[in-house]
Image 1 (tube, rainbow, N blue to C red):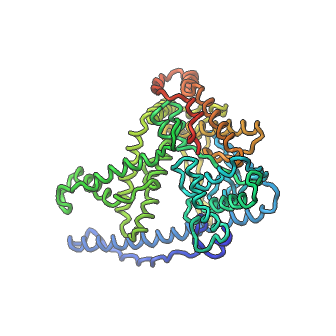
Image 2: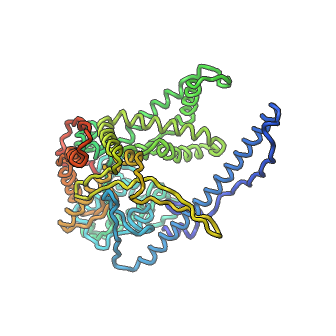
Image 3: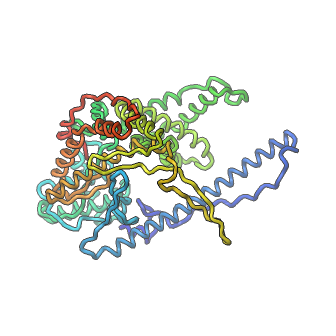
Amino acid sequence: AALKCWENGIVLGDIPSRVDYEVPPLPEALPFRDYHKLGDFEKKAHLEEFLKYKDRLTKHNRFKQKNMDLHSLRCSATLKLNQAQKFRDFEEIFFPYNVDFRGRAYPVPPHLSIVGSDLCRALLMFADSKPLGANGLYWLKVHLANLAGADKMSFDGRAQFADDNMDNIRAAVDDPFGENDWWKKFDDPFQGLATCHEIVQAIDSGDPENYMSSLPVHMDGSCNGLQHYAALGRDRGGGKAVNLCIADKPQDVYSGVMHEVIRRVALDADEMIPFDENKSDMTASEKALMKKIKSARLVNGLIDRGVVKRTVMTSVYGVTYIGAKNQIKEKIDEKLEEKGYDIDEIEPEIHMSCGYLASLTMEVMGQQFKGARQTMNWLTECARMIAAQGQPVSFVSPIGVPVVQPYRQKRPFTVVTLLQNVILTNDSDKMPLHRQRQVSAFPPNYVHSLDSSHMLLTAIEMEKRGLHFSAVHDSYWTHPCDIEEMNAVLRETFIDLYNQPLLHELKRMWEMRYPSITFPDLPEQGDLDLNEVRSAPYFFQ
């Protein structure tokens, strides 16, 4: 299916368009004029002319960049498909892994691997097949519902979703490019199509329990960074929001933040501007108020779960205001284009509105997850004290990985040759510390070390049990027949990990290493019972 999309120019999932955008012509440069010698009227006319020129130049460069991005996506898709073709006849292939300075594991191959996109994951299966057993088909159906975006209901509801769409599933298998385009609407269409094939083949085998399946089924953490913060601080409210507690249906932290952001945006959009918008002597507070109201009016009605999801997900990993604004802008651009707006014409307004929305989303996050914020603030303050001593922040992860943050100032220098000047950067360990990055990067790096510890502890236990296992950070994969055992393993390893006094040990280690620093008291612990995780059905889902 992916090859057919590529060969026939069908834009779907990771397969980009093979047709470039039409680039507006490059505007002619304005003739030089001495601005200081112009009269007031001429200055105003020249400024207007310059702004029009600048807008046309910006639009030209933006479309030029879009075509460059398209070329890069085409190269990436071609490399993935070519590698898959080369390896398709091998009985099994192996991926060498690298562990980064925090202990996170990544496959070394840059193009085709499980950490890649939807296309990569759809192309890869376990080398060994195992019979589906009593519940394997059930978990394949749950997996399909997850890929289709029907993941806000119970597991039984997700399996029923697949049963209710069996005609669509069969149509996807029989004629994937026919009139029924149900599977093409998935967020991960190629993985969805692969799962449709597995379900149909299992049912048509006449004996699903003995059908030999090699398709990995995924169980993903529910906003995993917040799960780790909730466990660290024993935060019951935060833990409940991210499914650490027993519940009849999954809690959706993204929807909770979305509803509050929508409420606040609607209030701001309904507010009247209590002064003349065109007056020339606006105060700073009046300008700020007008920007807020106009921003709210532009994005009001456009906010859904997808708009806030990435910002909520990355907030615990130290996303900056700029990063959050760019994440939100991607989604807002898509929605405005769907409504027929020329996003290039209103680029400044979109930029301002997305900044407003990023600030609002991060503010809501801070208020709804106070326990996580307290722990994050404690980690940040300790890192600031260590960096002030001229030392890199370092610690030992729960599984014994020594972590030293590598952030140092970079010193560029220029090598002059006959043909060109080459700028090289020296970022060796002998350079001075980059104190700001040492501080801001520590909370997310510490949480990354915890999620990597959980993953590796799960991998070790799965290997002891003779079960196949693969993972992409907080997404754990195994055969459909082994999902329930993997679910039990990952819960036990999580409980064992957080039954250790991790923050106490971290503080004790630092006090031994930096005796001259008086570190702040540990944040107050909540009353979350970690043993609830053992019975929390949607902890990973």
